[in-house]
Image (cartoon, rainbow, N blue to C red; front, side):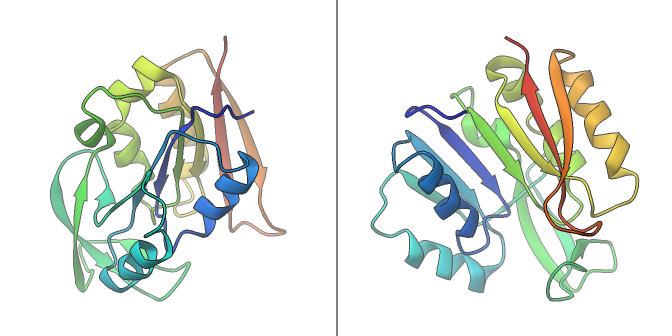
Length: 180
């Protein structure tokens, strides 16, 4: 369930398809959206798509546990992943650094295998605000159990649900909701 005071973080915003879906579900009523997209060409499209939405804040970085630069292997779609063998350098930052204590109510991550490190970089925000979580768990086989385990190590009150967003292994998502 969403309120009209949602602060949504879209990790891996692409051109904003998930943001549009979110806006639809909240009937356009939300407080703020942080949209992280490190690919320069895609980021330009994201900025253009939301230029008339002052509460959508595009950030041209990926999410990780700290501010640094990572190598990325851009295989053009679902096979893309952060890797030392990557041919592209991508700036990354953490949710905790960007928010600096400010509120977040919903975090979505589909960030090509960097989800575990990005969750570590959101630890303080998750502990403080207990946001709803939608975290991709299909980029690495071990994500299927490591991501739920990490979420519960940050806050043991989280109820975890795994859902298939299509008919195969691709698009498996871990949903987390803190108990009230």
